[in-house]
Length: 556
Image (tube, rainbow, N blue to C red; front, side, top):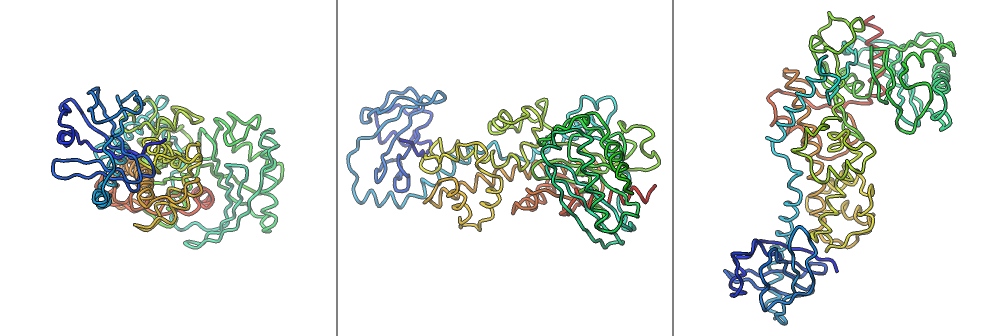
């Protein structure tokens, strides 16, 4: 039988109930209800404490080696190595109707005790501003290491040079292509710009698994063929079209139009590509199709996010992704970028866009002061242990699983669902990140979404108290994510050192979580002094890529 624990340190009150007990040697006494926990309660009357059994049996947990009082009977041996717990059942006889009535009136006491236990269990997920400022300081140190030629190779936050030195200014006009490659499908887009107006046409093409596992030549020939068909369908085959290439795989960039693949991910394993310049491979394939396409830039989605936002807002200086993964880029002074390859950028231009790759922040134990037991469990069971720790604490890929681990611990302790854990809640990956947003989207005091989610997991007829506590766990996990992202953005704002900077943001967590924007706005204001705006950036991997091509082609 599982135990639902309601706890409070009540050793001092026990003295009157068990006069022979030496309370000075008892650090705490825990009270537990076995069953659904809805009707049992504890009555406190001045210095006296009474134990009431209604629909549940009442237990005491004793956290010491003090001999049990003679009026209690030991019914099971200690079950915890952390605590010397002896489980006892009180033999006080039947309760009177008056006592039961008094117990029901004090049911809120039990709820409050459970709430406090849950908050205690989650306390390491609640970060103070002092902790967040330390995160800012350490992130800033790592960014500076990434920018420095002497320390770049050993830096955790690599701060890769994008070689993008110009942002959109609203004068861009013409037709521009974008190629967005990052999964089993890829997109081709045509964007027509006319100052602040734009028109977009796009098409999605599949990549058969045979090509994902074939040769690089086969893959890029397929992409070039689709580009040729797309251009022909739009009757633009006679026009030279600038193209921005969003390539969402690990890349070492040596120039605006030169990027070498570090490794394949996402199920790709094409031969002859790792270590090669993917822009050159694409250009060779395009030339074999005799299509008039000029590859002007290669970029990742974070750069595209900033560019897409900057086209609408001239003050955009930071691009942020908070979705399945997390990353940020920002505008740095060119003089501070020591790792850029000479000759591949203009020293006369004051700014350079830097891709921080901040998801790797936390490696080499620099974030141990905020990493919890739940984070360690996530990391140990991931495909890349000890890597991307900051990303694992904030991104959508891990938020649902992090929440599940907390809920499972609380159920095992007896604080949720009467200690009864649905099978799906014990399975890794079964608590989806979208559940967090759905549960937090319920109006205060209502639990429609929460009950639907719990029903999907096999829990029905749950109490309002359980729903409230589940929502609290979701809010703690998502709030920590928002606050860690806020610390990162605050560090970048301090580094830029200007007022009225706009942060362009994209990603499913930011888009769909009901409170993420507000949580970030409040916390960033608390952590730094500069004025700023947060702006949803539309289609960074598509429109942003075309804008990079537009800027690059018109600045040549």
